[in-house]
Each structure stands twice: as C-alpha cells, then as structure tokens.
Image (cartoon, helix red, strand yellow):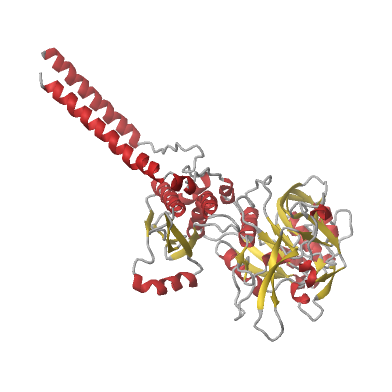
Length: 563
C-alpha cells in the first residue's frame, strides 16, 4: 500500500507543478476566445488601436437599467458584454449601468434633462400574458474622458421596423458607436474641413446640425471663393490646407478661375463632397395661391468638370412611388387647420440597396431626398460605387416642368415606371483623377498646375437638400433628418457623417460598420402559445435533473460506505 501512496503523491505534485508552470506561461500572454459563430465579441483592430491610446480613466454610463421588454434586455446584455470586452483590453475603461428614473419624485426633471441634451427616451409597452404596462427606456450611454463627454446612441432608428429588428440592427452598430465615441473624446483633432461659400450655397443655419456634428471630430471652417477673382494662386494655396471641401447646394455659376482652384485642389489630394441641385426647385415656392411653380435647369457651369471626373448630373427630377410624405392643411376655411399626410413623389425615400455592401451605407436607415436628379456614370478608369439609388418604381421627369401641389391626388400605375427605376443619386468615385483643364488654356497661370492627380476620393450627391436641417418656431436648427411636419426621422445625418468619415478616415473606423451580427430573437407568439411547456422546460426540467442527480449521488455514496 505504501508504494501506491507514494505514486499518488508524486502524481499530485507533478500536476500541481504543471499547473503552476502553465499559469506562469499564461500570465505572460493575453488572449480572449470568441466562440460565437459571427464573432460578435471580437473587437476589430481599429477598436483595439483606439483604446490603446486611452491612458486615463474613461467613464461610461449606460442608461439601460430597469424593467424592459425582452428585446431591450437583449440590447442591455449585448452592450454589457461588449463593454466587458473593451475593459479586458484596457482596464482604464470603467462602465456602470444606471437607472435614470430610480427616484420617482425626480422623474420629470430627469426626463427633461435628457431631452435637452438630445437623448430622447422611448415609451415601450411591457406585455406579460395580456397585462400591459408602459415603461420609459433611455437607449443611450455617455462616455467621459478628461472632462469631455459625448453621448452614445444604443438604439438605431429604423422607419417601419419592429423593436426586435431595431435591436438586431443596433447590436451590429454597437462597436462602431462606442469606438467612434472613444475616438472623438480621446483623439486630438487633426483633419480640416472647409465649407465652400461664394456661389449661393446653403446658409450655415440650414446646415447647423451637420456642422455641429462634424466639429466634434474635425476642425471646420468657411472658405469663400470670392477671393479667387483677385488672388487665385493664394486662394488655391490656402484651400490646400484643408483635407475635405464640402460644396452644399450652390445656386450660382462657378467661374473658370474658381473651377481651376477646385480642380487643382482635387489633383493635389483634396477630398470633395458635392451636394448639387441641377434643377432649380424649392418646396417653399409651391405654397402660393396657385399651388404650383416651374422647375427649371440650374446652370452651375460644372458639367465639364464632372464629365471629366466620370459622372454626369442630369437636369431632371426623380419621381418615385416610394416617397416620403408631406403634411398639407385640409378642411374648410375658417375651421381649425387639420393636417393630412400625402406621399410626395418628388421626395424619394431612398433605402440603401441590399447589393451595396459599402460601409458608408451599410446598416443605414431610409433617407429623405427632395427634388433629386439622376446621375450617369461614365467610363474613364475611375472606380465608381453607386451608394444610393431610387426605388425600382421611379422615373426621371425632364426640366423645365410645372410642379403642382395637387399631384398628391395622383394615383399612378406601377406600369408607368416599368424598367425606369434604380436611378443613381449618390456615387462614390475613387482613383487618380485627370484635370478638366488638361490640354486647355488655363484661366490663370499656376506654377504647380498638374494634369494627373494623386489617388483620391470624392462623393457626388444629386440633391443639395440632403444636408438641410429644418428650423423650429424660434428659428433654432432641428436635428438633421428630422421632419417636424410628419415627425419622421430619416438617416440623412448618419449618411453624411459616414461620407465625411470615409473620405477622411485614416484609422479604418468606418469599416467597423460592415460588421454583421446574427442575433436570434425570441418568438413571443410561440412562447405564449406554449407558456406552460416553456416554464416546465426552462424551470422545472433543471430542478428534476438536479433532484435525480442528488438521489443517485446519495444512493451510490451509501452503497459505497455501507460495506
């Protein structure tokens, strides 16, 4: 018996020594294993690079705590697991879940506090076997670093989608939302954005929400082309200091000197975002006694430039059966005004195509366009990606054309739009552009003139109103994409910010948006139909198995020691 005991002792010592050695080796190496099929908890290299730069405590408050429907519980769980993953790689990341409405007496004050900061709560219905109760959910988080705080949206808006569908989309968006927030508060601004003025572009107040959003990550300023007339060379050199130029809905012609400045800016690697209306038409011009106006082509003198780069914006209007609504006053005169929503066919509701997997439009909600034109792509060696296009049931209407408000009464047949749809309205171009002044006389002498540009990117959108925010009754800017007349929120802001981030991105942040998560959602109807059976399986079965195991263990133990 003694040799056996010594053998067992040696084996035990060997196992302990092996475990200590393995533990020592393991402490020198860090790796987390993600066993999910879609790798939803595997952080991208971009996210890891961002959190490596966080040297001080970064505090995250998540306001998803309380009694929620199952879908929001899922969002809560996925958010917690993602933040635990961030924390595992950098212990400076600290997070907590908070119930903002824990103190009932402060409920109204807290809700107003959140709404004033743009963190709108949601009213959700809890349905427990027919018993319904209303609860308020704050699908938001805040991240604070070195005294600077940014808000993080946890729930993506999706028009017409169920709560379950919104949660699935939101979970796919979580890593990007947090990584973008961390990047915003932890990284110093580097890139510069110029808002081009001087040719009748939109007033800053009508782009205020967009400018405010861009300012969180980039320096942004106004560059007026008026100086080109007197000092073209100096203007070009000054513009080159900017990394991105945004031309938002110009209404006046560009001179050849101004075009040369913009052209050479592109040749030298400057990124551009063009938001162009080729037809002069405003919604406000319809609100007259006749309820009609004439839409006519808008000559901006840019056709030759776009043609050289590889696109053509046509002077026509997209008429789309998949349209956003407008609200018109109805009822007899003298009575209280009542507003009725009608589809407005000149305001396409544009969804990203399922075949377009580009990160700019991936997982994006519907966008609102207004009097958009069609874009033709031309063969010239530049890579072109159609980011957005009208629905299959759309067509082009040439200008000039009379536009009437009473077209809301029309009920066009789908046969009228056969084989005329899928019209491009936003195109990304990437490559080495050729100057439009190649083999042409220059409007002014420029020593650094070049005919072949550096590898570059530009985006052309055939609607200047896509960047336009509405104003409230006090003439304060509303959120970009929000329509105060119909109370709908469209994805215009997210699309434009994605465009800016993609054109300027130097750390691959935008590519996180391509992440796809396969998130199973509980089927409530099946659960309610088999409520008793579900309870027995989820609650009763584990108890039965545990009882059987206990009885068997007790029986075997008595049998062993009874001898």
